[in-house]
Amino acid sequence: MIFITRQSPEVLKELTESGTYTVKEEYISSKYTTITDHYAPLYRMLTSMARKYIDIPDGLLYPVWLSPEGTDTIPPSEDSVFLRMDIPDGNYILANDEVWDHMINHVYFPMSQSDELEHEAELSRYGIASPSSLINGNAGNFYPLLRQKVLRSWERVYTSKPRDPSRIVGLCWELHREWLI
Image 1 (cartoon, rainbow, N blue to C red):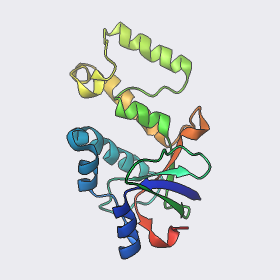
Image 2: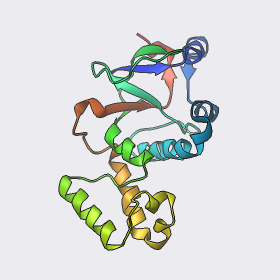
Image 3: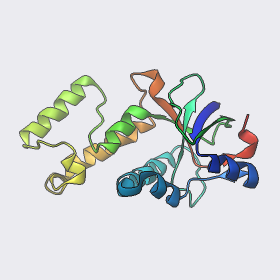
Image 4: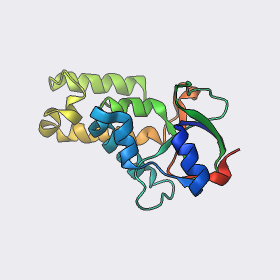
């Protein structure tokens, strides 16, 4: 499948010189600085969930984000390059970026509008005013089943189709020079 990814020039240099590129924790720290502690565990969770569907080499914890060619979902930015890559099946997984949005906000991803309304009613019954408090606050300690429900909903990142087809993204844990086109 053909993907586009936006990366720093250093990534292209590493890819062309060494033949491979993988995301290292220091890259995450450099990109996210003060909010690394928020993103890094979520990336590791994405990786753990993806291992149910594709083989990911041991030691690789952080994915490279990819945009399927033709979706034009990656805006240009300063000091970056676009890489066009033909990545063989089995080396990437497609994901629902709408679920990712819910993950980074620490909230439940509903299966449908009725599921969303039921979940909101459940939160209301328990007096939970901040849905994210089930994950990043104390509410999860008092309502562990609700917390698990939220965490399980995030597994839909690989199994649900986004309402907007442009929200399909690819994830890959290792790029190879020969995939560049």
